[in-house]
Image (cartoon, rainbow, N blue to C red; front, side, top):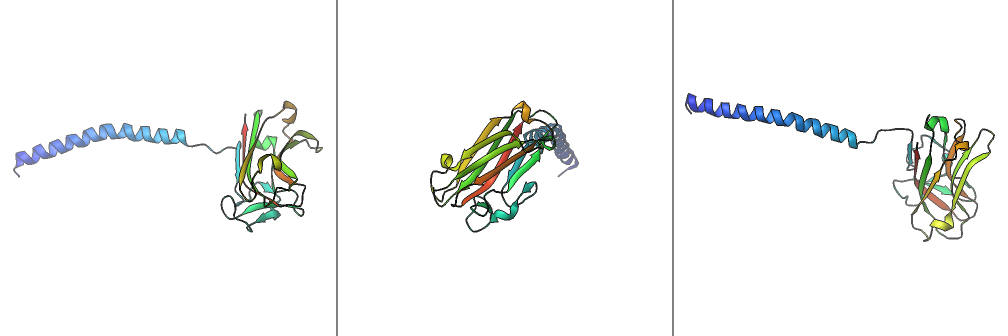
Length: 192
């Protein structure tokens, strides 16, 4: 390759590199910005419990691996001995300093029998333990098939009188019967 051909080749290659740099930088910037916009930021308005970790949850003595969990290894057992599942428990102040408008709570449940008594509960109580919000979705309303995981959801507006910063939000299962009911994959979301 002669000197002229070498110069022509490298000049062409250099121009391509300059053009590539000119277009590559904006493409990279757009990709970075779009990935940042798609990523959800962590905040106190979203909670999830898959029974594999227990941070932020109260009453973990009812964890079990005796059945195939909905996800992971562990699920929550409720029965005569454990009539309340482990509970999500947080004060309004810990969740948000802004007024909360709604709560959406979901859970997956399974039972070997349909002879159960109890339900999935969302509760807000004041420091005197008086109910400011109480919603129960009976097991019979959503567990329709034995030994099959079923998801249920409670969605509710949060009344203004329930929004005192000292009030406590609780989400749990309450089993008043003798038949075991298992729970897994709780999800709780608040809307400001």
